[in-house]
Image (cartoon, rainbow, N blue to C red; front, top):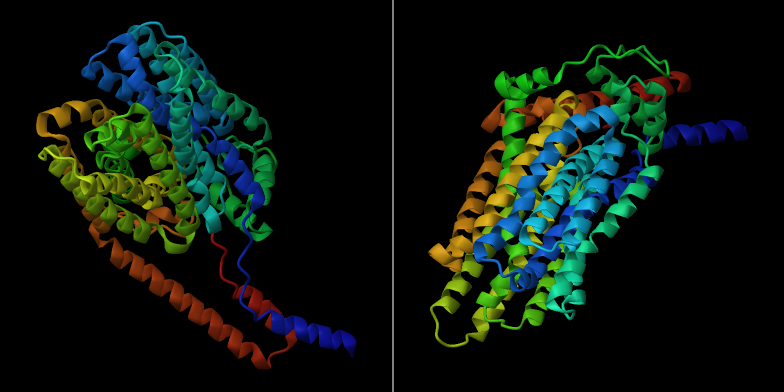
Length: 540
């Protein structure tokens, strides 16, 4: 009798909606460690904004040399990002991070001990290659480890650590600003070797990407990693099945070590991406490259790298006071990126991105207006100074809550497995080239057309970005990495495809619900069987 009651309660509980899975702590730990590599870029960006004040005084360089020194790291990083795709496919995502850390470590020391402008530029080159490696591999690794239920949250980690690195750089500027001019900038740059040491050591605690393991035929290792990084055993099995299908491994093949079908070579990957892509791949490439381009074209590096210059134009004359204001920029940027990580998987990519970019347009217009008014006024206008400072803080906050993290989340999750490493490398290359152009032209641009007009230009580019995102970019929240191509290929008509998919899921859900209701008069064994059959698939 007691047993029958327990069975009855169990059957009733079977009808309860499934509980939301808890965040996978192991996946968070893996992502956290991988994202340490992003600190390398962030620190270099942040520290150079203040170090350049003292470098210019010590080495007596021109504004053009300042621009080149500040922005050339982005161009140098192209060498790293171009090599990182092939390297990560060869030695794995994990050990590619070790390569990145080692190269950046050498670059930081070279910059710290530089005695001439040429020596300093060589150090920038070495550090830039390391940054290029780190920028490419961290988002790819995170996307391949994270379960879909928290992929947006976890894939935003690299951007969080970039911001944390920027803040560390700003703090370093203030900490060493009281040293002599000859020593201050050397300590600022040289201390950047420390994060790379932590990154290299952290790799020992990280598993390899399950997708890379499958591509090497190591199904047993991939299965163990997926079991730890998935929300359930069933999800791990579904993720493994999807990866095996993408890699061309038969579904019924479950050996620990298997022979992987001969993969397409690099030339075929480039052919499929660039020269003869399908409509879906072409759409993916356009959006993946476009979001990277507009992230930088909207002027974020001009604000982050030259914030002391902006505050000087706004009326703050003391070097120390300008550096303190710059620290405030870093604090706001970091706080809002943390907010964004918790909103990505709740609000979706598109709403956050469109809100972010729309706010960026407004803040850039107001910043440009304030700077223009100050530039044409002979009196000190406190309200205009406050407006400029407030708009700089608002701009970086709005960037961090959407445009910043979503660029890396979106581009890392839309490319198919076979094209992901190369596709992400192209996106990172575009990102770095655009960043280099912005950072190496800002001082010349503001001299040619005034600083206010320069920010009006960035506002116009951000407005174009909003139209691009609204028109071409479908929502990817909750979609499997291997399913992503179904949303692409129709370009601006993607909404119709999304509606069709939504209606299909709704129909399947109604069919499943009706099947469950009709089981009310059946025997318990058949009821349990049908309920299991009607369970919706877990999203990978």
